[in-house]
Structure formats: C-alpha cells, structure tokens
Amino acid sequence: MLSNESSAELVTWLLHYVCCYRLTLSPTPGCPQSVCSMFSVVPVAGTVGPNDKPIPFHVSITPKRELTIKDEPILYCHVIEPRRTSVTTGSIVSVVPSMASLGDAIANIPIRVSCQSSYSKYATYCSLFMC
Image 1 (cartoon, rainbow, N blue to C red):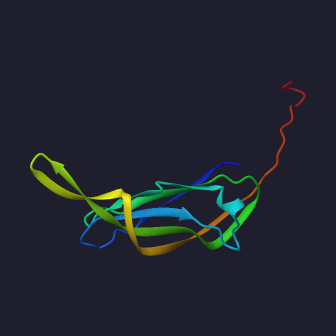
Image 2 (cartoon, rainbow, N blue to C red):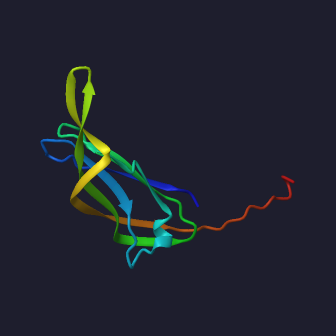
C-alpha cells in the first residue's frame, strides 16, 4: 500500500509575540495506538510570530492493512508560550524565545482526521504470443 499525504495550514495567531507549537498524535477509542503509529507529521514543532504566514504541515499515513477512520480527533496542536532567554551580542542584550525552555500551554486544539485505505489484489499473466 502506498503512503497518502495530506497537508493543512496552522492558523497564525493574532498575538503580539512569538508562540511555539507542537503537533502530537493521541489515540482515541475509535483509533487505538496501533493505528496512530501509522501516521507521521512534519514538522512536529516550531514557532509562529505575529506577522508570519500560515505554517503548512503534512500528515502522512502508511497503512499496513485496510483502514477507515472518520472524524477522529487524533491530532492535537499544542500552542505553547515560550520562555524568554536573553542573548548578549557584544554590548547588545536581546530577549528571544527559546524552544528548549517551553512555558505554559495556551491552547490544545484538536484536529479531526478522516482517512480510508483499501487493498486491491491483482495478478498479471503472460499471454501465449508474448512468452
């Protein structure tokens, strides 16, 4: 079975400062951990500024069997306020957000996922004139 890739965009936050985000997959009763492990998300984390464009992310699935998921909230976008760290460059001290030291979660946004994979079996035979 082939991997199917879908893309979406994170809404930029109308904030006056930079925020961090992290995308996680979380199992639900309709979608157990064995199914969630078939999904992958790129990029998993990053930062969003007040003047940034929407950030695209890709969700890929590589199913190992037939699968149907309908409107399950298995993907979560955690919006996190980063802690500020000061960086000294010569005599200039600037305060920048750091992904290494994350602060409090501002929001946890569930993203509903739907997918359907099917398996087709086929065979090819050599005709008498081609062999």
